[in-house]
Length: 559
Image (cartoon, rainbow, N blue to C red; front, side, top):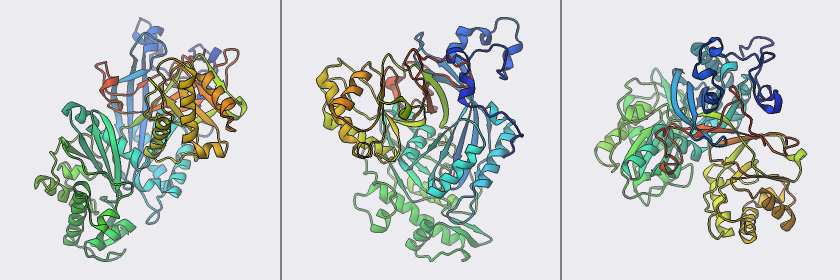
């Protein structure tokens, strides 16, 4: 990568060198570039209390998909919403500093993405944005569609790691990508405004992601193998053909192979078949076998009473008539075919106005924050468990307010692993819970049982268990798991910290003498709060609420 020799790579450690982990701006070895250092008079930037409550971060979202690769550089303004130092920050404004043109994702072969060429696209975007990687505070790299194939994902992750920058790598699976698209497109907000279910259909290059959203929350997600770039042609001949593209053509009566001639009329027939298949998959209880075979996930059940449908993804640009160029693939014809079926009411939903189309997923940029690690921490073995980077957070949907039913806890945890395309026991995750009510033994014991029964593989292989709660029960819960249940896994329970789905956390080493663990929270930011209106008392409704980022004023709340 074009990185000057000896260039300084920033790491989070650089920011934690000062006394007690507080990032001071004393003279000395801090080579930070602060635009405001030369202001003599009072200005908000020089007032430390104001600074604690207002933060600006430069963030990059890198979206590498089956067909398109793009970068968005943003300046994110965050503000703490209450006097309480432990409260998180909300994004109050997002300005786009630079958006790269959407480049076609480069392939070495039919299935293998050329990761070096992806690296060059990213380098070029940084150069055009005139931003050096060292000046990026935070970012997310989101791999979707074909970019998620194992060999692709690994190679791309390595190239991006070389480029430096503290990135959260949210390698979205089909379900997670459907979620990201529904928030990024604005469908989640539309469902809240319309007070009715909205279907978001994100048609990308390789796959179509479906999300059903109600009152600002995504309730069902699914993906189907229909996309605008499953075939690419040049001068009337096929130059790239995905195995799924070949099958779709066969369903429509063509035997496509690389090198074969292809006409506009042929493409129209194939995309008409694809559009009909999509309609059938969404509206019929019993679908033909060749349509059923296209599902990449469990099918999305047909839904009654949908208030409207919204399209996002590259092909949506054609559905809404915002793009007329043809990129020598299936996209333009597929978009037109889908639009005809919407207009003819074959897809029986009201078409909602376009939100973000091709950029929906990339808008999920990401941020960092630090939160204090509660009054108590239970750690069975600090050496084994800490430090830990990029733990994905799962917040199972279970109510811990009244009597706790272990079976419901187990079910909620298992469902959640599925929703995030994760296999229990494969990778470490942090399970986050909202604790409510008295710490009665019977209630804690029921929670412990529910957790134990949900994680058979983790416990069988004695893999570590990370639990984060917002109530003060860490010690009791940790002791219960280790002593009463006698589990072999090492256990870390942190309380007093609120986490959400879409967060990733870094856990630092235990700090002495306070016996706390610094928790750095990195969250995907949506232009709409993913948790729906209940969390949104404030006028500023466009973002995840956050603590602050490493490039800026680290008031490290460890206690």
